[in-house]
Length: 350
Image (cartoon, rainbow, N blue to C red; front, side):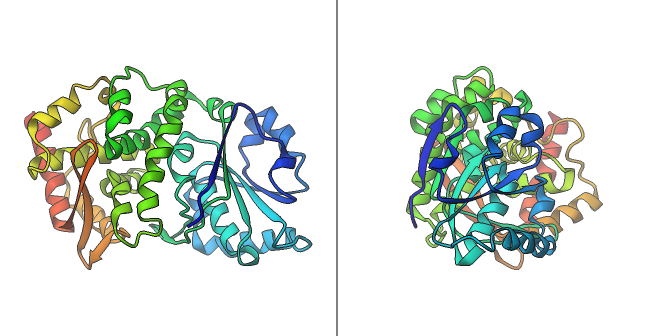
């Protein structure tokens, strides 16, 4: 798999440096909120605005999108055309998929506009569409030729977006361990400045994992799903932002790791004493997890649609022994649901 080149920039890049013939696929919110982006995008002769969100990735809506894009690009050359994709994770997934199939594959530049996409989804080459409520069921491995990380674009987000990106930053720091976790664990606040500070190191950590298993053949890359099994369930059920749901999923995975004696109590307590873990919200606080029969039935349905299934009702779950050491085990859907009930009971008995 080809390696994407990374460009860190304080301002939007020169359009002339991105390619010969260009099509900009962008989140339609960006020109409305950023005068600089609105001015910048006018330099593209071809552009296609989309509304960000999981609906953009719905497979049944894709034919209409691709028909319009093909018409836009009818006079372009497959050898000279470059798709520049500006937006968050859903726009990046959609635009990357388009690039991978348009004219049997054209050059791709990803320019993430959210912390979530800048830290995680823009890297590693995965593209995806959704089928019904099942996320990312159709896709390709198609790494961008270039990934442009624009500080002014990312810093312009509301500070709440920094917290949403924190889930993926914390995840990769636990996977990597070492200096990344040692430094991040000491942080007392998560702001846009904090996210930019750790952006390069977090990308390096993800790429290190991806390089060992670029197309998920050996199974090593699966450790990147730490926190995502329950995270995706909560994201779908409660309509939570992805990063917030991953926070909850990480907390769930940590507690289950202790219950299964994969992580020692002392290691768990050491992690909990880290200042930055104050930002790790528990999915069991307030009324988020109610162990009602109807909820468990819905959770079961969502778990059964998980791509990480190995058998009809078995899936791979990523546990954490300690930062830098993940353990992958097969678990049944019933075991996950039983752990949901156990953690809720533990929380209630406090």
